[in-house]
Image (cartoon, rainbow, N blue to C red; front, side, top):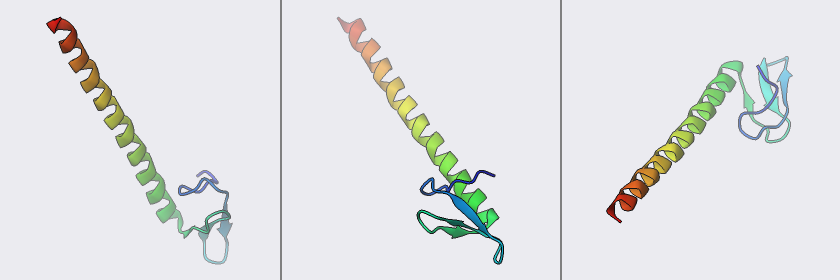
Length: 71
């Protein structure tokens, strides 16, 4: 597990009394399970943005080729 906050990228510290992680920058306070869930969500969101960008580019490229064939 990395020592960086999934919300802001700040440094995480483990609170041994509660067994939760605390972000020094944004104050996020979460268990290990919650941290894993947040990281998974962040990863999935990044993948969706990449796919959307790819799909938009593919649409542009395809329409551009059609326009070239008409000339």
